[in-house]
Image (cartoon, rainbow, N blue to C red; front, side, top):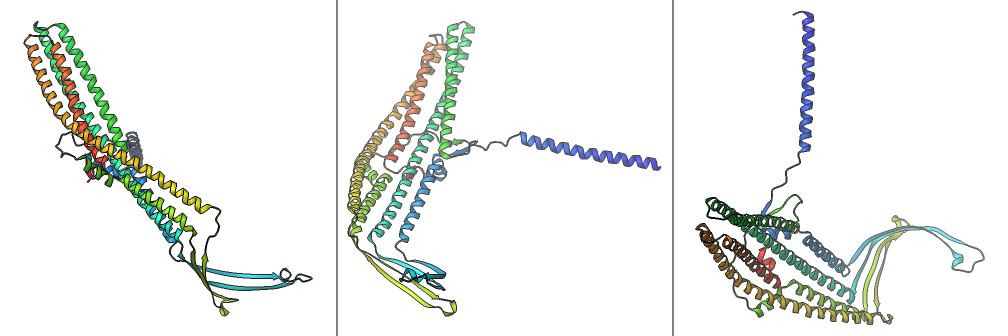
Length: 455
């Protein structure tokens, strides 16, 4: 091979290599740009049963988490209050260099310095309350406050559970309305095709076709409205479940009817007054008010404290010796400017206010339980009536369709039967929703909604 040919081959090889590198760089840039242009796909919808939805809300709903944080803070306050009843010990050390002017202590004609001199001391300092009733009451109040906060946390959990159950049922109702609207659209399409076919054969009239077409458009609009309702109710459920903004829940249950035992009103009221977390929180408030009244009045009693220190003390560590102080203090308040009387009177007023709140709460619980039991009994009957009405409406539509097919009547009868079917569908869906919602309302009124739907 000639030198010129060899040099030419080398140049071609370098050109091809450079071209390949440029091509790979362009391809990589295109892929990188394409990956940035195409957003990541949205996560799939979360399919949840009612029980799973309630558990998820109780796990990550912000209101539930905030209530839990308040409960933990209350427990920390209890620990802080308890620390005042326990021994307090610390280590202390001092290194001092001092000089005094004797003229301050004695009548000298001129200032006279004493010192400088130094000392070193180090050791434990300790104290212990021996008898301090207000301090004991403070710890008891913090302990009751922790119980109250936990009861308030249970109130929040009950409220969130009831809200999730209600919203889940609203989603089920919206989906049922949507499915019924789809079925009516399919029926309206068949009836419109029937009217068109009869008009072509001369049996039907053009107005029948127009009437069927208008009815079809109405049902299609109802379907659009129903679909919109399914979206809006799902958005609210996603908010309660605290799902990511690009993720929506999907329900796995359906509206249904199931037999329930009869509820005795008086027994249910007794259960509600015992189990409602609001009553438990109010009971803690009453105990706190009583303890605050005792704490205020017990400020007149003596207070006994012990404190002391033990120092290794001297001019230098080499010549230091043990030095200690033990002190028992006994204090009796004589005159406080009316503060103790005012605090006691304020605590009495707080007890009266809480008593009025108890009466209001008990009256509301009694009303909620009675109303929920009556609504549940009425909803149970409404479901049976709605089922009969739906069966009748389906039979009327079929009969009107046959009469119109035979040319016995116009499709006015068919359209009327369609409207009756739409009302019957709505009545059945509303009856099932009302029954399920009434059951949830009764569980909430008795303080058992979380136990009913989450366990």
